[in-house]
Image (cartoon, helix red, strand yellow):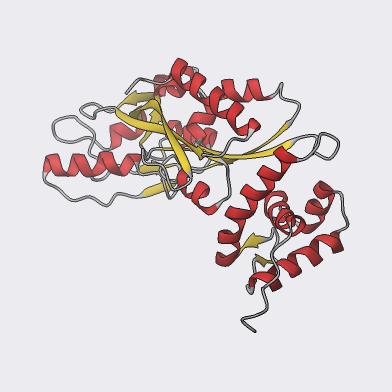
Length: 303
């Protein structure tokens, strides 16, 4: 490129098209959200890719950002969110999109108060992604969300992190499964008893297993099942598919939990939670963050 010629900068419309295609899960849906034609969205994405010199979107179903696209998406989301706050009332969108990442256990327990509160917000569209608290901050780093629950305390560049409290988990097993995997002393033999996890990022059970192996000076590689849905996870526990860790509030809310018993000799686990969010002032993000912090103060165990 001629050094005397300055490359064209991306337009707001092009950045908005990128965000919409990824968030809405398709070019047609993005066009509907933006109030333009599908061909206009395609043209804006192609023009943005030409400007950036990289393919930004894989044209799959649904479309997904490439590695280059993810880096552009993070900035694009910030720019679009800021422009929405600057637009005159007549031009501003009726509802601002608010993408956030939260854990399934939080969403199914204490965070439900925030969802109830958000139901009264007429100017916000929630986009809630379910991410394990150990990896929620990664969605923030990729630019997929504006805020995320995370077990990590340190904020990323351009973000803030607010400590919320601790979620307590109880290791449990069905009575039928426990009866098949007893040690000579009558405890549960974790070296042979199958494990049930919520997903690939769910490390709670294996933290317990590693500590148990260290204490008993043994190695273990038991069968590990995965059920990546909260009700399915509970169903698997009660069916005896494996033992696992369940949030204390969820355990207390279950009807007829006599078939699940706490595993003797294993401690309960406290997982620290922090609310990570962009440092910029966005009204919808401010309101959601305040609601999260208030709900956490009511429901979570203090640090």
